[in-house]
Image 1 (tube, each protein chain N blue to C red):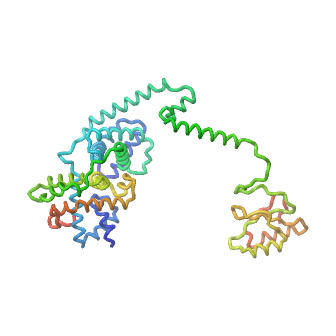
Image 2 (tube, chains in turn blue, cyan):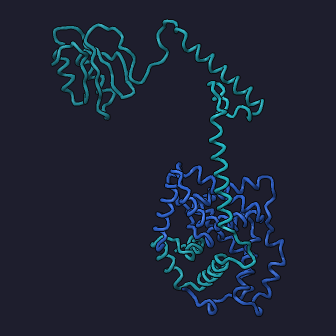
Image 3 (tube, rainbow over the protein chains, first blue to last red):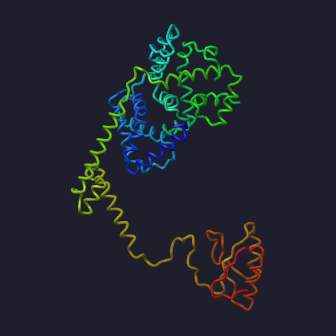
Length: 195
Length: 222
């Protein structure tokens, strides 16, 4: 698949076929989206077995509701929106497993010596663990933008909030990571400036 | 250029989803802005970290998950095929099944039955013949015209017509308003039954303030 628009067109065709009861199309959509949904859900609930179950709940809902899909949003926005809704339902009454960065000093401590002899891959792993400690509302914006490549409009649609809220949450998420990023010693000379 | 909106969109410049115009604006903002370039580098590091699947992260077994989903769908389909044999045959049973009556809490059932009762009583009251009396309201399309002597015509006036102009027009033709204005702004005007009726009608029609004139059926046309 060459371009994003061709990818979207292919997914729309699958959804149309799924609406007519085509299980082959469902399998195609499943192979493309299940790992993404799994990661999205797992980051929210931190329970692998429950995340696996939710992936199939989401795809089952798509199987049953594909005929009603009107294409007002992109397939990925629709699917991730269902995934988020399902996950929040599953989490109802259960405390979200998040710790404010300010209450997780080990994350900052880990970053304090992050630049001392660690490889880039190790630093990125540390960053992922640190992002996982962000409050849910900040973390999901970061995940949707950088793992799922959603535009701010799509993130707003998935999270059912205004676009400006999305941008502000991202800005605050990075502000919370700022001490950590500073410890990494990121500088213009190291990063090579604007790419 | 306003700093804050640009900084708030920087993450989406990094993930490549800004529109062409937003992207051009961002590049212009970044060009001579070392602080923004540092922010860009930070976002790029975040993107690279998040986009990567960590070795320590659980991997999803897609084929096993797909097999479970297909089995679940087949189970549901088999259950649905078995359902028609036990399908309710009486209409009220079908309705109860459709409304999931058995799953509805008792208080909700009481509320629904009470509401249904109220709706039925109100419906029956509406069906009772209404006592003959003048209607207290009038539909937008207008009430049936009351029987009056003379020729009744409907006129529409130019939007800038003043009250004084209307009064002059009516006095000149010995006309009087017997209805209106309607929802469309028209008036029903009566002309006296005399030998000059056709002339009065023509004068009304020819007046620049009158932009619409409808003569009742059977009336003389000017």
